[in-house]
Length: 359
Image 1 (cartoon, rainbow, N blue to C red):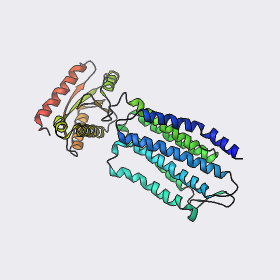
Image 2 (image 1 turned 90 degrees about the vertical axis):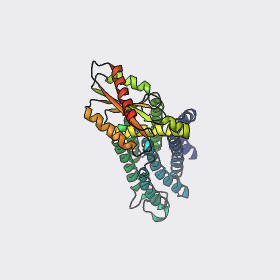
Image 3 (image 1 turned 30 degrees about the vertical axis):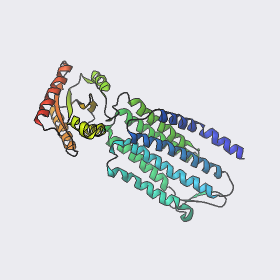
Image 4 (image 1 turned 180 degrees about the horizontal axis):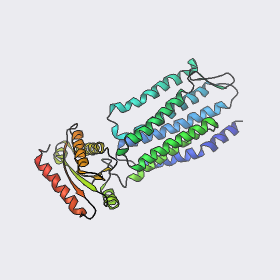
C-alpha cells in the first residue's frame, strides 16, 4: 500500500520538483537590484515547497482507513499556504507600492482564514474528518475557496488598475498566471486530481520570474522604468505617430551624493522615477531613464494639453517628496527631425532648471 502511495506522489510531483529546483538555481545565480523583489520570490518559492509538503502529507494520510492528527496538519497547512502564495503574487505585482500602508490590508482575509481553518479540528466550522477518515465540510466549508477567489479577483483588478505602471508583457503574464491557477483549482476540485494547484503555482512562479529576468534587457534596474536602449528601440516603432517628448532632470542630485552618499542619491532617483510613473496614468505614456539623472517621457497620440496635464501631475507627485526636477517638452510629427526635437526638449528643460532653485 505504502509503495503505491509513494509511487503516486513521485509521479504527480516530479514536474513540480523539477520546476522548483530549476527556479532555485536561477534565483541563486541571478539577483535583481531590488532586494524586496528578490525576497518576495524567495518567499514565494519557499511557500510552494511547504505547500507541496502539506499536500503530500494530506494525500498520504487520506489513503488510510483511520484518522490521524497529521491529516489535519496537512489539510490546514494546504488551505492557508495557497492563500499566502496569492498574497505574495499581489505583493510582487505591487512591489513599487511597498511604502503604501494601505497595501498591507490584503493580509486581512488571510488572517480571517487562518483563524477559522486552524481552529476547525475543534469547531468543525470549515470541515472535520470522521473516525473512518472521511472528509466532511462544515457550515462555512467553502471559506478557503472563497478567500482564494477574492485574492485572484484582487490580483486581476490591481493588474488593470495599475496597468499604466507595467508593460503589456507583465499584464499578460499576470493574467496568464491567474487563469492558470483558476483552471488548476477547477480541475482539482471537480475531478479530484491531486497536486495540480501546487504544480500550477510553481510554474506560475517560474514564468513570472522569467518575465523579470527577460525584462532586465529593457528595464533600468535602479528605477524600474525603461532604459536608454529600450528608448531608442521603441522610438523607431512609434515615431511616425504624433509624439511629445518630456525631458526631466533631477535638481540637486550631486549635492545629495556629496553630502548624503550615493545610496541616498539612488533612492532619490528611484523616487523621481516613481513619481513620473504614477503621473503616467495614460497608457500612451512611457517613462525612460536615458542618463544618470535624466529621464525622457514619451507621450504618443496626444495633444499639448495632455502633456501639460502630465507635467502638472508629475509636479504634484514630487511635492510629496523632498526632491525637485525640471521639465521641458517638444512635439514630434512625421517628417520632423528626431534629434532636433530632443534637443529642443533639452533646451526647454534647462530653461526650467535655471528658473528654479535647486535643492
